[in-house]
Image: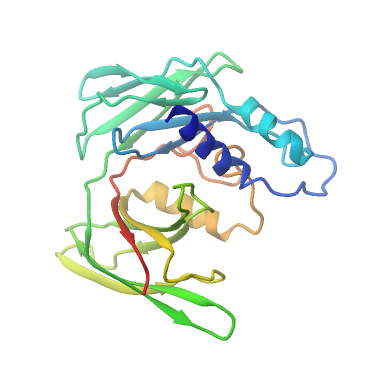
Length: 275
């Protein structure tokens, strides 16, 4: 299981590596830790800690595996603070940290902190664990065009009182459970912040050919404004870097003395088979 999990992360990172950019006169890179967090069934607070690297880095296909492995920052002592208590994350794999014992307290603020291995100063960030919001209705259907068979997603969300931001992820899964590509992300911002309401809408995944036998994962997450703006900014970028490893200097970050985004949410996950 450990080997499978590591290969999954490795494939995710390698799959995002772009061709080197033909640019000159780039200043020396300031090495910094990059924080990425993700959810599992066992733990809602899991971190991947890597280091950034120059976008013009040139490597052959044979060198990709060793490059990615070298970017994980291992043997970090990561502390988590919530509700006056202190916890620590275990290193599950090199550069991958988690703890299933940290309490899940929606509405509470969590702080992470660890030492920057490049300058010895503290890296820290805080995030609120968002309340879980699920789909009130979720449907999908295939739309045949002249060139492709596209996936249309129709949804309804019971939108709680207050201003809210949502992320819907759509991923195709292979038969061996590997994620084949980065997810399609649909961002939703509610228009009313005073009353209960139901948000309904639909979207179509572009530039992707779907088949009835495909297995599709669709998840809805109630996210904070900082993460919403980060995702919106990333979607609008005219060039793409490795998301987990290197961010353009114009990207928003809530990491003190580092890069990336620390955010906590609880996805409502559905597996569908489009018709």
